[in-house]
Length: 153
Image (cartoon, rainbow, N blue to C red; front, side):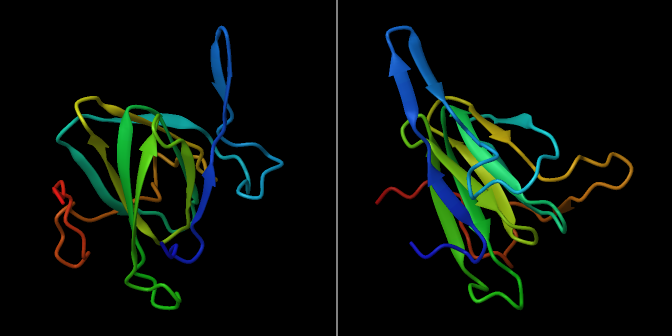
């Protein structure tokens, strides 16, 4: 899949031993790291779509730490070489990935399967409660060429 301009994806490595495992999600010595704003976890219940939104300044770094999540990106940027492109990722325990999302790229996610999906995000900016860098559209906005329904191929 051709990635949207600015998007980066890194396969994460599980380090198991007889007690369990450890998985690094983001390190300051990785090329995907820019700066630290804060970290948080967001949950999506099965059957729910949390989309669409973008940020003007903030880069996001998504890792699904519980369940599986379908993370979808849409590039509306007029000056982008990938304008109009959609990327779809299936991330979580079956496919541990870090997905780096640039500013101005719409994104959202949905839980896959019967479990909730927990996504940890490491945004580059601190959330501003008085003036949030959040710009939203409905999940079924016809201006974004994506259908969130499960595709039974």
